[in-house]
Image 1 (spheres, rainbow, N blue to C red):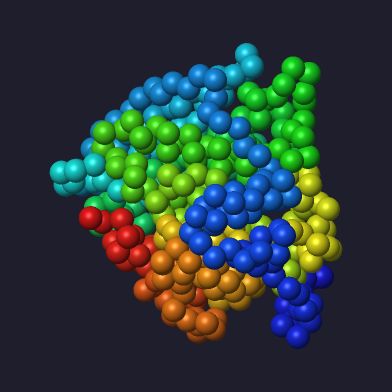
Image 2 (spheres, rainbow, N blue to C red):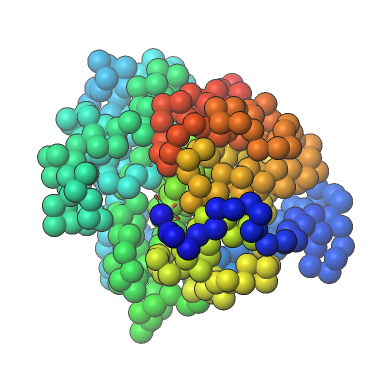
Length: 406
Ligand code: GCU
């Protein structure tokens, strides 16, 4: 954790939040139509231009190859491993999807979709899951040797994915490794999916083009394209979920693709659910310095200049409206600024209300262990650190039951 980060509420600068319901000419947005036709597209465009960069459409050619399938979890789930091949510009790359569908379902199942940090083999102890061959970040605790997964990598993140609980609750779980879409290091975008879309002679995205979070987001959207033709899944009932950097990604996916029926951000922090203007914990300057590849280059303009950014993260949450959005924080995860995450969820409320939906039903950060799960915006503050636990999944399943189960 950074020594120079501020953790003192008393040292938070005074700030004004841009109002999601006042347009750039200062006019109040008072109708659903004005939100849909003008204000929402404009806010989305501001996030593209200044924060995450623009994302291209599907690859010029995509094919799906079934690598493996079989029964899992004592027959309670059907497992499929699918390789999506992406072609463009004479380049090719692929991503491996792991899908567990509940066998007891008689109808296409609703699903949770989320990317992982260390590959499909890391999210479960299921020995039939193929070990990823892709580049991985160094992490001795995850059994990574020379940037590759090893047998010791199996199941290392299983505690973050309550797969059996998800299956037994009637949902499918769909996941893929984020690094299949773009390895998480600053390589000038030479690998991953970016080169599939470069113009002739181009070797770098433009300052308002996608970075790595954009590439991961693109991946989630391409998986959703696949789920639309997957008979076991009801693609109109897919909740996109992500933790931390992948929570930032889940939010950007929900904002840019309204096919996602529900959006869950866990401990997503700076550039995710947390308000940048609070400068509490991680800041824009700090995230751009440590992870120069995550956002678009234009985002660096706001290093130590948050107040001049035309958007803040409550407006990102507002882009989910009217769909259910769930922001989750953890008491000890101060780097991600739990209160800033809560306030962003709170200040998205007026947009939900304009659309006839229920905003957060509390107006103060709750105590640790408390859940505010009765609106279309939900929030919880888990007791503990930067992680995903079974307790988090229990709350998200409860929310999904309200919103996604017929
Ligand atoms: C770092 C980073 C965060 C990020 C986190 C993660 O802590 O500073 O912005 O959310 O990694 O992805 O685990």
